Amino acid sequence: MAARIMNLPKHGLCHLMRTSALARHYAGSTGSASPPQFTTLSVDDKTGIATLTLNRPPANALNAAFMGEIARSIKELEKSKCRGLILTSSSERIFCAGLDLKECYQAEASHLQGIWVALQNLWHTLYSTPLITVALINGHTVAGGGMLALSSEYRIMLPNFKIGINETMVGLAVPMWLIDTYLNVIPNRRVAEWDLTASRIYKSEHALKAGLVDELAASKEQGLERAVAFISSYPKHSLVARAITKRQFREKDLKNFEDNRQHDLEIFLSNIQKPNVQSYLGEYLESLKKKA
Ligand SMILES: CCCCCCCC/C=C\CC(=O)SCCNC(=O)CCNC(=O)[C@H](O)C(C)(C)COP(=O)(O)OP(=O)(O)OC[C@H]1O[C@@H](n2cnc3c(N)ncnc32)[C@H](O)[C@@H]1OP(=O)(O)O
Image 1 (cartoon, rainbow, N blue to C red):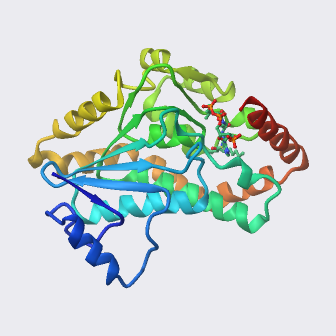
Image 2 (spheres, rainbow, N blue to C red):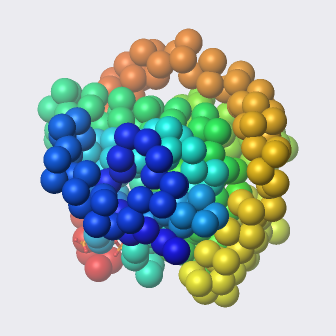
């Protein structure tokens, strides 16, 4: 039975906490984190599989609060000993449009810093989690949205959507940690370099052929079934060993990131505040509006 929840208790989430108990938990909560605004989370008590649904209309664009909320949920799920996490979207068209560009335009340096640090933390949390992670990509996912999908272990996508990392089109360099994430999925360096320098965006069907996604599903329901099947394919006794093995594969990328975290922030702040980048960002935002 799925227990629909508003936020997570400190422990034991996967151990039969029901909606009423959760409501009491929040009523009496010490309030260390505010209730979720942009996500909903449900956990199936029987399978120990959580589904985190992104819900920041219209495009699930990532601002600092939204990214912080996703990262906190993952951390709490880890403590509650859930076995797996499915990431999906409440929108029928957009999984995630990447960073909220409206918040990157003509913003204070402190605001931009908050956005970038939240993006770094979200990537680190998702990429390093011992949970079995599946992105059920039920809409377009680009840039920071591509990061969410590619940092997950398995990708199931619905047909006729777009996926890719288009930062260079926005006028900025792809950070090393995102290049490493891409290479973890597309290990052919030539293809990866070409994709990222050219801001290549794949349609679902082509993404499957290229190995950027692992399966196509005809509907969200079918995608959810497939995601549950993937997570459940790992027997219980293998979970610790698989988590250690996953960590070993990703350790070098995580260490490189930690060694360069501050430098990465400085590069972003310096680039995003350049007059030509801001000017292009303004035009880009206008083009998104005109399209609507
Ligand atoms: C700039 C910093 C770069 C730093 C480089 C380092 C890299 C690290 C990782 C992440 C960086 C980023 O994420 S940069 C974000 C780049 N994102 C994009 O370029 C996506 C732009 N959007 C689209 O291409 C399309 O919207 C879509 C393909 C995602 C969906 O297309 P669709 O036709 O279905 O929808 P609309 O285009 O009509 O959009 C609906 C609605 O959403 C608004 N919108 C879309 N994207 C964003 C966004 N990224 N930020 C804020 N708002 C966005 C769009 O304007 C529409 O709004 P209105 O209905 O109000 O007009």
